[in-house]
Image: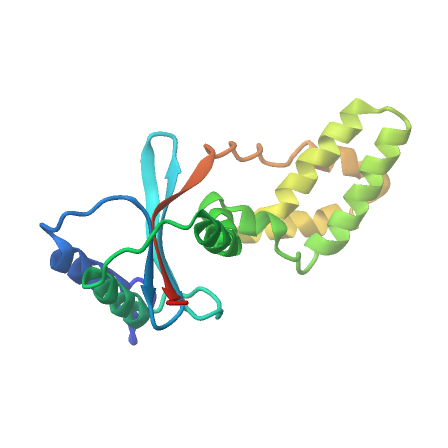
Length: 214
């Protein structure tokens, strides 16, 4: 639905294309500006980049002290208002406070872009007792300074934290149920760890802050 392919599409791609068309040819620049008006609001653009390319970009807005959202209507309204308004004096304190309020939004976007949401989500099914058992195994390996068992346990915990195919879910069941003498052999059958993704960085490409005239 969010991609515009469902029965009730959000039409986000169509909105982005229309937005780009309306602003094509205008003198645009990156940065931040404070506009004095009769209400409090803000709109921000964010890019997520990995290595040498942009992975995704998005815009969010808020009115008053409400939370940030990707409401297209609100973003359109604020951009149009900014187009016919004169920028006020730069106020680093206002900009810094607004950027600070964006941290949760940006952190959630980074978690999604890097796949970290899979690793922090609550485990379900047999993965949960298997994880408890492997943590005990790791703790025992630390006490006995057994680096081999610790490496096996660490690899298995990473395996449980990611997404699984049907066969891998069955493997999690075996990890939870296997007799003690068979556990290390079973750990050796685990698939190779996923390669680490390249680091993803967030860039604030534009910020417009509307604040009431005092």
